Image 1 (cartoon, one colour):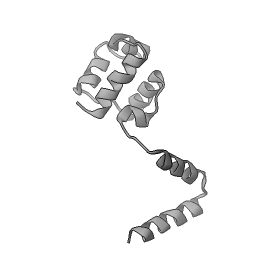
Image 2 (spheres, one colour):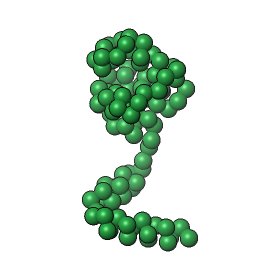
Image 3 (spheres, one colour):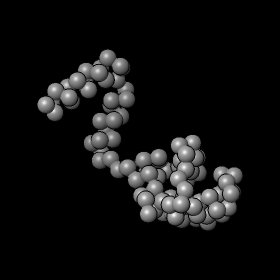
Image 4 (cartoon, one colour):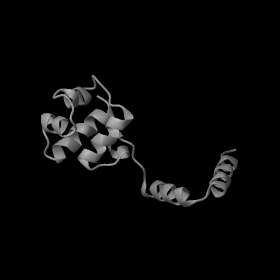
Length: 98
């Protein structure tokens, strides 16, 4: 079972939703959530976003990506930079890896 399937089940249960209730809230067929949780089907990116919103979690949480506090902080700072400074940072990182 994929991390996504496990996390979908975990977050659905935390919200107190049955598979049918979550499917209905998203206008899916009644077996859609069961198929996602069993790994028979995988959602599109648009459906992943809708699932995350319905479950009040981030996409990272839903698909099982975990970042440390430092990584989250770096990403936050990086996003605030202009394009020129982002390129400088990327060049620096590449130089440090050499």
